[in-house]
Length: 445
Ligand SMILES: [Zn+2]
Image 1 (cartoon, rainbow, N blue to C red):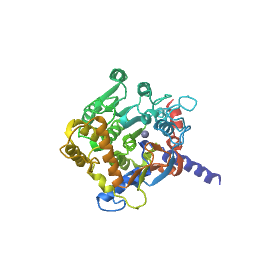
Image 2: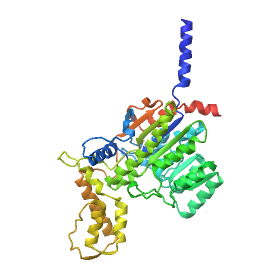
Image 3: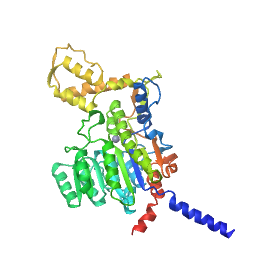
Image 4: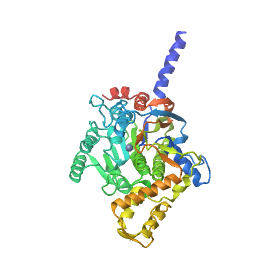
């Protein structure tokens, strides 16, 4: 009996050594990505093939494990990205507006920080500015998400290996000072993907931004070949962090502009952002296939944005294929319209038709002259986008965030730990537990 017990103990020890402990952890956060953002994208792809359903599934919706996640903050039933980012990063609920501090104002530390202390290489990436709420929650501590300049300084204090996305949001002098300090702290700054490729081998730590100074990477629907994609950022992050040869890596990748487009009720732009996010996850999935026993990929969202509903009133139909006629985001449509300056109503109508497939509402003679002001450009663009989503049978109930569940998808080592109804604070706690960060941290001391 004693001997059997001994073998049993040995087996237990063996399993705890050889099972679990994902070495490569991807934490994907679709900002504002609710269930309808995900399913809507798939059903849009379906309609483009003339099918009702999901003939072309996203990579991450095929992951074997999934959960519902609650997102309310300590102060509000509907969270903002600061409180939800803090919950997803640290496992502690806080008040809306706060980054990496609890309701009492104490600094709280993220799972990325725990990964670093456990000896892992760490990367933080986004499509919006690198000192925005979601990325900030993984390295900074500030009472207000709006203290962008102060939040940016924390990047250097956290001293992670890789930061990528739009530039730091601050004024030009502050940005210069920040990057001078970053270089002094051993960071290489790359602008654009080819610049990254040229500099990566020599770099100790990396900041990868858009080619031109820009707070955000343009919407997927508006991009040119010079703009970074989230897939390129993820590719660069994997390449850079893997070659650090540390005890594995932890990488947070945010699809930040799903939220932006949802605040603008711009559903075609939303679906393109979800596809960009999915393309980044495909890159991680390719890595997973080569390192199956050691990799964990989690995909979730910080909250739902827009109160997006697939359907309008009672007619039981969707008409998502109409969205294919939209060629630019609402923001760029406004710019194109405004740039026309002294023009005619006929020219305005032509621009709207070319970029959205829609007719304008104002019925003026085509040759009637008009000076297009910012106000008029905004009104015309908004009406076209509104009419288009109505035609597609889409509803936006909130205009801001909503308090609904967000989805979670997981694959890889110990991914079955993510299931059922979870709170957003459970996610980083679960990652820390299964990756054994506490034990590894003490080993590293
Ligand atoms: Zn938002």
